[in-house]
Image: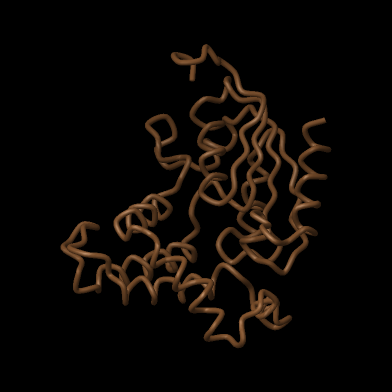
Length: 225
């Protein structure tokens, strides 16, 4: 950014999910160059329970007969991608969301129709190698994996000079409120504002969810002001 656009300092870095982990990285690796970050449904280090999900998805892709090793595929692993999507469906949304019948709100006739249309078809359009290495990157997410911190997460968090807005989803199964609560005590300038929602991880990326979208806009505008 400095070389191409002469931008030496950032007013704010905003990220959701893995993007939220990247926002954390900006502040930890370039502490003097970032004034604020918004960590929307993310964490400074991928939790062990989160890694259990990620490694189950990696194993699903590796079990495909099309897998050649090290995330390379001879062809699109259709059956594995269908299974991949169904695993994601159980984690991205919450128990309360399904109990409320919101999976049928878009017109799906039943659960099977919803899983096929919303999850299988979504991942059948994806490149399996891209998914594989995205999972590997997410699994390794840790802002303290740097020569200056050497795995000391409290040190990495304490080094951040930016003002941090932590916005976990109150029911997110990936990045839990408890993860941000544990980070909060090590940050110099931070505020924790959970998103009150049954939409799980998708509360932070509220397509078709105006209530959560309004909450995000209101809180971010308030915080930036």
